Each structure stands twice: as structure tokens, then as C-alpha cells.
Length: 452
Image (cartoon, helix red, strand yellow):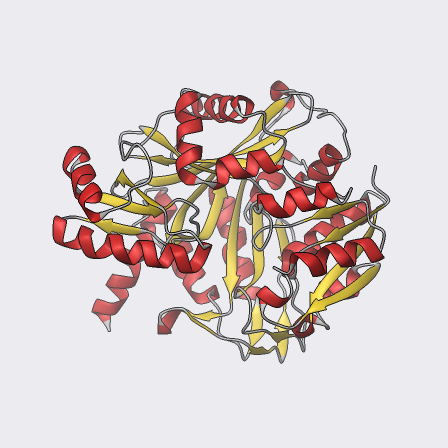
């Protein structure tokens, strides 16, 4: 086992990794930007190093600074968290070349699954169901029109190196396609440094289901069940839960087996997530693989009792998985509400600022993952997610009831947050019945606008 690791991230995920490492008896090093000097992860780590100015490009994305911090503190491994450099194959290679273990998959795993087109081809080779679409990168508007004619509208344009909805456009006709194609290319270039896009058949109002994978370096792979990630806005997840109210035992086993097969087919190592889109007839299609720990890993931990971050560290240290598939047991129901410092009544505008009053919920069945505290200054430089509330109950109904109570207890002043919006979702009859699609949030917001 490692004696000291560096966490190349910030916020709640940095705190999460520090806690897991401490419980394993591992010393931790936090890196921070000038804007994060008073952040909680800096206070909790055994050591800390400032790596640059506030902009992420000068700090959390500054590979030389992070490697220098690792070398001067003599760490054996780096955990990237999620976001920033977590899915950067080049960063993983540099870590390995500097004799620093990257706590995550291999650079080759990241490279294959980080390129959406390459990932789709790898999944197809492994026998996974694939959404109809272009055979490769689409370079011209003429190719885009030809592809759309073959697979028929509606179609969706996706950035090959995309994520978070960037470089993604839905089109229902030729006129929309031409303009959206050029816009998606420009957006992909700006966001990812690569303008490559491809086109798929757009599955209207699907459900978004993902399966958690753990794989060691000895060929052992297990899945830890699914997470329902359908409640999202502009392709950004807002509320997640497990198990999914849409899956029965037969479909669950089929999807889980396929997810494991996909991971095995590329020799995957460490934690990862296989993501699927499922239509109204329960037909499902491979969408992508995330080669990192996910924000919503918490609900899986609540159901299985397995600490996924500890497992990541153990696998990176060369340990074998102690679980076979039959050893993984799922109990109860868990829901996660992401809390963003955003104003849901003003198009979810970010609301940075100082927290004057704070009360975090607690009690039976509640877990809080956060980096905020009273007096903390929410920075305008980074993602506006400031906390995750996770509830657990013996049933979905109980998990919802506990979450509602926790949302009522959460006090954060004077910052506007998405907590009122979360309350609306958890009180909506369609959500309570488990009958919703990725269009749920848009329809809810449209209905509110009509009332105004």
C-alpha cells in the first residue's frame, strides 16, 4: 500500500479522496490555487502545495506544477478525482514516466474510451448494442447531410472528445443540421482542442442508465449495479438514484453482464462507468464509458457498502479485488441531489459569494459530501456544485421521504442554490411514480414559465 498520495483536484472530491486515504492509513498532499488557499481540502490534508493562480489553466490543469508538487512532497501516487485531468491520458503517461502511480485506468484505457468514436467502435467489437450513426468522424456538412438521410431524423451531433453537453446538438431537419454542424465543430475545438464530431440517431426522451465497474490488474471485473441518471438539464446530471425504477431483474442482469464484457474487452483496470441510453421499449444502447470515479458514485456505495475510492487506491497499489460478482449485494434505495450555487429562477445563473449562515442536514439515512463551511467563499472560477446530499432508505419511497426532510434542513445564506428546484422534482407525481425521461427537467421548467 502507498504511504503518501497527492490529490490533483479540489472541492468535495478532494475531501472525499483525503478521507478514504486517511482511513487506509495513507498520508495526503493537497494542491491548491491561490483562490483555494482556505479551502477545506487544504485544511484536511497532511501537506499542501500552491500550484498557481485562480484560473484552472494556471493551476488544476497545469501538469508541470502538479508533477513538481508531487516530486517535492515525495508521493508515490496521484489521485485525479473527476474533472480537470482525470481523463487525460497524457497526464497519466507523465505520472507513470515520473515513477508516480496514476490512481485510475491505464493511459490506453483512457485514450480509447475518451474518444467517443473509438469507444463506440470498441464497444461494437465487444458485441454491445450501438446506436445507429456515422461510421467515423464527419468532416463536412455534405457528409453530415448524407448520414442524416441514411439514419433519418432526428439526429444528434456529438464531439468526439466531448462531455457535459459541449459540442452536442440535436437536429430535426437539413437546415438545422447544417448550422448546428458548424457550431458543434467550433464548440468542440474551443472546449477540447479538437473539432472532430460524429452523428448518431437521436433517441427521443430516453432514460440514462449507467453501470459501475471495478476491475483489477489481474483480469477480474465486477459491476456494482446501475444508477439512474435521467434527471438532467442540458446533459448535466442533477439527481441520481439506485436502483433504477425502470429496470427489472432480467434487464438489470443483461445490462450488467454487457457492461462487464465491455470492460474486459479492452483490458480495463480500476473504476469506470459504462453508460447506456434506454428507449421506452427498454431497448438500450451503449453511449460512452467514463474512465474515472463519478460524482454519483455515492449512491452505489450506500447500496453495496463498498467504498469505491478505497477500492481505486487498492487496485492502483496492486491488490486483487476481494469480490466476485455473486458477492455484490444490493440493499435498499439511495438518491443523490447535487446542490449547485445557482439561481434556478434565473436560468440557473451561477451565484458565487461568501456563506454567512450554514446548516448541513443530518440524521438517519443522510450523508453529505461537501467542501463548504460557514464563512467559505464560493469561487466564480470553478464548477458551481458545492455539495451532494445522499439519502438511504429501505425503499425508494423512504429514500425520497428522507431526502425531502434533508432538503428542508439545508440552510445556506445568502447564496441562492438549486435546493428549491430539487424539492420540486422530488414532489413531482411523475418522479414519484418513476416515470420520467431526459426531457423531464425541460418540461418542468417550461410548465413553470407558462405559469409565470
